[in-house]
Image (cartoon, rainbow, N blue to C red; front, side, top):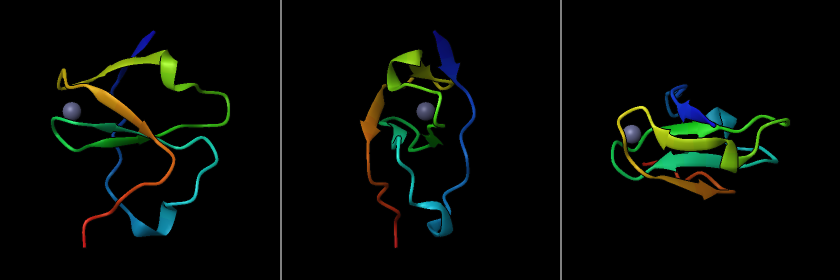
Length: 61
Ligand SMILES: [Zn+2]
């Protein structure tokens, strides 16, 4: 288990990803899962917030 600590800045150019994303419900940060990573590998965001697994990333307009 590792902490969610690699939040990327939201970029509409990178919204396709097979593994989906982990989104923090508290700070709104997200992490793009890599091919060898699983949502269950992550326990929490670095801010302590809960993580939600989502296939599609909703980017604010
Ligand atoms: Zn957070």
